[in-house]
Length: 430
Image (cartoon, rainbow, N blue to C red; front, top):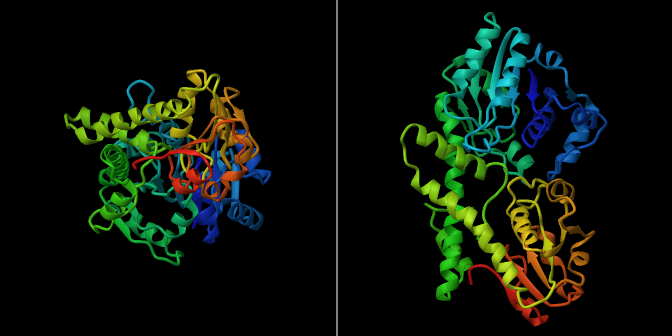
């Protein structure tokens, strides 16, 4: 079985590396020549734990190839997996599917033999119907099935999740396509649970899943605020709540709000879709508004820590939206930094992996340090915004700060250790 991946971003590259590792011949197609040139030169264009080794191994074996030539990538493919971006429309907040439609229009003329076209891009319900219509219009003789196969890879754990998926959701009523999917996943050592549903249901499952998790994140953040007012400890509360098997302990970590490429985009797109059919998703709408407000609130918390200091300077640890990735899309850390900069506060930041991607957004509005310790030098407060595990191991005695203040939004520093080292410490939820 030959597999073609359309798109080489945070999903396409992971999926391409994964299937090539399983022994498939994989061709990744992208329309950005510079990106393909880098990949063909052996340069991994993004960071993800475990990706570099997997990439180099399968490029060297010839199982993983990259091209800008759509015809070359498509004409002999048995399985085409679409992973192009569907960003939010800047005004309406709906999912923008123009890149997906463009990709389908480009591959349609080259389809030959029976081909399964699996859409992994997160799209509005009913998009699969439109994809079928586009292909039939351009290539009436094409023999194909369009299926929805949403991705559930967690950034930072994407490689693990690819090889050990907790479920594979497939939207199709075609038995031939179902057989092809079963064959596709047959090499997996841990055989995944494949859930076959209607295509529209599969398209909605991704949105419903991410919206639920976003609600859970915002819920524990609100409970953290409540804990601060009544003298409770949110980490104890979260542990007790998470022991309930009906709830579970995942996504009960209080912080500066959710971010990344999925939660902000998918919650907004889901609300937009619901409004079009006169459904009120009040819980999701409240989550979106509350999460937006939380980032401003956390920025104020940091600025309040240095309000008595003239010409203050802040050190920031962490710019990625979460640990394990260099992705800064909708990162709470980036948005908080931008708010602080807008108030004239000088910032020196450090992130183990996301310095380059952060610079593409922040530019020279802040300074960048070579290490976490260097970032803190001669600053008046330290704000911890991303939960990189390395931050827990940094001896506070090494920090040469003008004023010893820590605002820890990720529970990275032990409050007692900080205070024993002479720091004023402020965390979340206690």
